[in-house]
Length: 393
Image (spheres, rainbow, N blue to C red):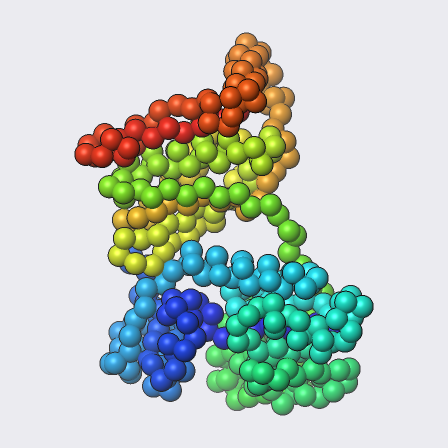
């Protein structure tokens, strides 16, 4: 039995500060500066005026002149969603985090802990500590349909053949919750297909011929079939952050990034492992945030190469920043000197320097080996001009 936890309008609730702020208010997430001018998640009052997520900003303002645009904050959304997923994992669930506000987990292995599916759902709701719609079904898609139809305080549980019969009467709008089938919603509506039962009766061959792989997948979903869950692997997360002050853009911001890279690589929790994927994020001076996930082509542990790969992403920053963050999402294997066998002298010298730094820190503490980095030479505050950062081992 798969359980779906759906937190409606998650990004908008985070931007507004609390769910009560959405009651009776026409709200929407504003597009980021420099990005495509389309609104993000919208409140129920804005939907009643005809505003939809992804609508052009001009059209949204024309349909609802009193709409209030809130700055999007992907950094706070990511932090809040990580806390929610961790809360679900605290009840023993292996969670597949589909997107912020939507997660799935298997309930069968939790019966011995919580007694039944309803006991598991109740434990997950208590762990979340916020209003959530909960549904359960034999597959991921049927659990999602049940969660969307459930009341806020009463979960809906579908079992066996009941789930397939119940799915037949649900609208095809459910396909929008899957990235692969979302583009099919509009053409199917133009063809007059309104429910999943009507979609199933079209047949897999006809849908595959018209829409390809997405059509075949939509037919399987309408029949109550789905792929197994892909629970996320729990990774140790390391993060460094720094308020940038006057160094909110340009060369000074790249120097701040270099400090964060050095501090991250010097963390003892890294244990010599390389970095495979990191997240670079920033809080903007004008409000809101910016977040960019970076996957390296090969696992890195060299500070200069990591900095070069990340400094290019700073060009995507939509506005001056007030704080810069760098966190590790995925580690690679431990670093090795095999790639530098052509330069034996440099390899031995670097190894001796790393050993000297490690011995110094073992004797005098982690802050014993530092180097000075000039961050903002024109700043009037001495602490802003030069920052001490660890020497990476």
